[in-house]
Amino acid sequence: MIALVQSLIVHAKSALRPGRLTYALSICVTILREVFDENAYHRFLTRQNLISSREAFANFQSEQASTQRRRHRCC
Image (cartoon, rainbow, N blue to C red; front, side, top):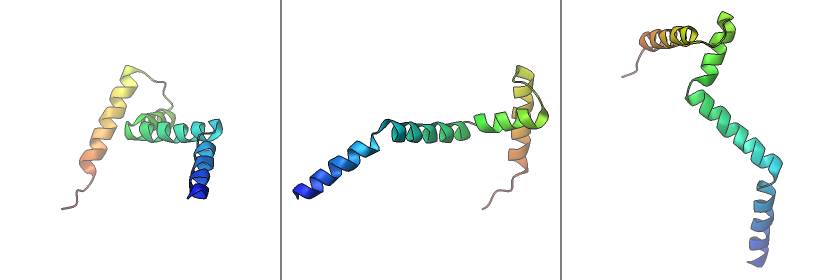
């Protein structure tokens, strides 16, 4: 039992090392950027050779809306 607790403590300390915590945080940020379409917007800007602006974002939203309408829904 004591060995198990010591092992858990060692693993918890290694999991909280700054490098691993930074890595985990970067994964979380990447996931959130995907969920909130920030990465898609950045890819759109790159593909269209545009800089971020109100007009560019409006075009992005229009493209996203048309893509959503074209997707076939199952069931």
